Length: 212
Image 1: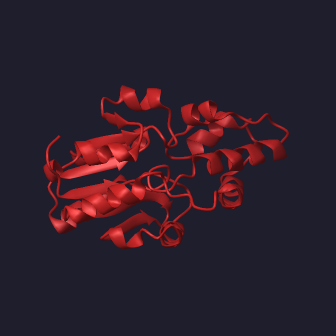
Image 2 (image 1 turned 90 degrees about the vertical axis):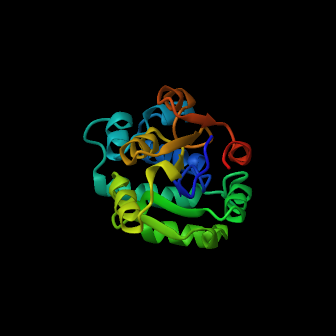
């Protein structure tokens, strides 16, 4: 794989290992509405951006509103999140890229305040030149954030790599004209990731061997 000057990281399911916490939150929400819980495979098969599409798929029609989903999911993730939820080998990958002098930024569909707070808790905020995230809790498209940043800083797509865990990250990379690596430890199924044609890894430890 060619050399890159900039790494665009996704956050949820890539830097922070919050998949099981998200599943726990969703199942709490389903149980509250007398609906059957789902397993991890069902969650990963149904996850989508914008996130409202996921709720429309998993919940019975008319049983949940956007506002209820935002509040209950956020509280549920906090409830189920493990004590040290840094994705395995994330610190080593971040340190490796930092040693190589690469610019590292986060582009997330989560709320900016939430991302900044979690980065501080994880103790990895100093690795990132910039943290870009949304100003609302609707978990919508984040591509415009990356596009504006790249234009403002004169970053070349050919020198930029996107690392994420969802098809949405691949779509963003495709729109930006960047290469993409997807991690199967995150929120979306490996089957969906392989269908994109992107490089797919099972652990962030693999980045050290394939990104120079």
